[in-house]
Every structure is written in structure tokens, then in C-alpha cells.
Image (cartoon, rainbow, N blue to C red; front, top):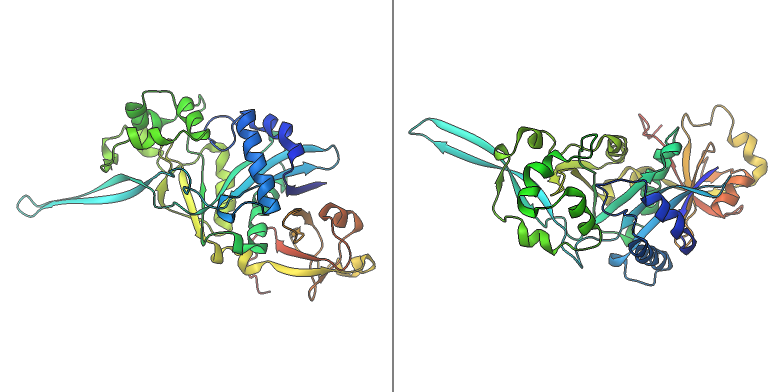
Length: 352
């Protein structure tokens, strides 16, 4: 079975191996052992609550308990941009008009922005290729929303997710080649690596502060603004299902969209419920056909330090849920403990 759990210090080697599979464009998962080790140390301290909430970086891994393999990773950063600059382009509009010439034009523009500084960030979502089947991707991505719903006081009101921007099959980024290369004079992968290790001051030093007219960019660069990498499209759909949306902010290097939401408006905040684990003898009646859900349920424990989440066919009934012994063990729970539950997929009518 698969369980999504809080990362531990013992996961460093597996995390590094996973980072080697990611490819370019995801700055938060680079195959750099020192960077990975430093980040993992922060993650462990985050779950132990030994550092302030705004400095925390909660990392989760998906473990295949049948073989002990780490199949995926995802994370939530408490707040971005408080210790180093956090830049985006904000898409805007400039209007030019002349009554005398009867000319009126609207021009899309890109403004260098720090507007999203301080937001909580969903990041580092990656699932090993051979595990991209069934509901595995949903389990990994949506685990973070159940965690936020259980501990909302640890996060800011605004939640964001930077999506990897479009790249051609060769790895070429049309947006970067049409804009960034003119200012940075280096390959996209090199800029990506520098950003990953925190060397972001060059952005402010080299990027123009005045608005950039989108129409001046090459056609292929214009077309990919706000467009995601092909492998990132499913992740975007999942986030949009949970309440995130695109509001005109994009990454400054590859123009990938930045999705955002208010934490209080997330589906997990509205629809997740707490339930007490009942005796396993209630299993048969709780799983009767008339009460079984059409889709699996996300079920997590309520422990910050040892957060764990699984998919289950069980459904809460009148504030109680019957979980098989094997699922209780995966959650490190026992009869009488409280768990948080949420339907895996959106329900057409959540009140039914």
C-alpha cells in the first residue's frame, strides 16, 4: 500500500535519487546533496516545531510499504520571499489612444513584481514515472490540502503554486529564449540552477524594472505565457479542482502560471471532516453498498510530527469511521483516535 508521510532524516538518499529524475524547470528539487540535506533538516525541524511557522518547509514523501521505496515527494513552504526575494511577472494592460487619429490600442505588459511575498507555497510535487497510475498522483498532491485543513493556523491566508512552464521536447524554453537570455546571457538550465541554490540577487540586478510589452517578444514566446509544461498539466488540473486559480502572475524565467487561492476557500477547508475510528467489527456495516463512496476517501491522522495519509474505501458515518487494522497501522492510529477525511474527488453535490 501507499502512504504519504512526513519526511524523515533517513529519506535523504532516496530524495536525492528522485531529484535526479526531475529534469530542468523545478528549482525546488535539484540533485544537489548539500541543498537536499539542508532542506531536509529544515523539514524535520518544521514537523518538530522548533523553527517559526513562516520559516517552515513541510516535505512529504509517498512510500510504497510493499518494498520501502519512496515513490513521490511534495511540500508546503510556510511563507516565501521573507529571507530572499520572490519575483514574478504580473500580466497587465497599457492603453494607448488618440482621438485625433482615432486610434485605441490595448497592449499586454509584464511587470516585475514582489506581490506574492509572504504567501504559503505548494511546491516540489514529483511522482516517479512508474507510479503514475490510478489515483497515485491525486493522493500525493491532495495530501497537502488535508494537512492544511488540519493545521490552518500554521499558514498564511494566501496560498500559491508556481507551475513549471512550457518547454519543447528538446528542453528549450521559448519564453526564456525570447526574453531572459537577452538579459542573463546564459543557458536556461544555468539560470535555473542558480535560482535553486538561492542565488537570486542577479534577477534584480539584471532584469529591467519598466513594463515589458508582450507584443515585442517572439511569437513562440508570447504563446507560452501562462502555459504549463506537458508533464505538469495533470498537476494543474488537480490544484484547480481544490480551489486554486490563475490570476495573471507567471514565472519570470519560463512564464509558467502561478495559481493562487485563499486558504479559507479551499475544498479541504469546506468539506473535510473529523471522525473517530470505531471498532473494526463495524467494518462490514460501514462498508455496506448503500453507504460506500463512489470514490475513495483521503484519510489522515491528526498528528503534526508524524503526519500520515492514505486512500481508503471506508466512509465516515455519524462522526465515526471503521478502518481495517492494516490501514490503522499505516496511519499509526488505533481505535478511538481521531482522523480527518475528505473525498478524493469533487462531489457533484457535497451536501448529499
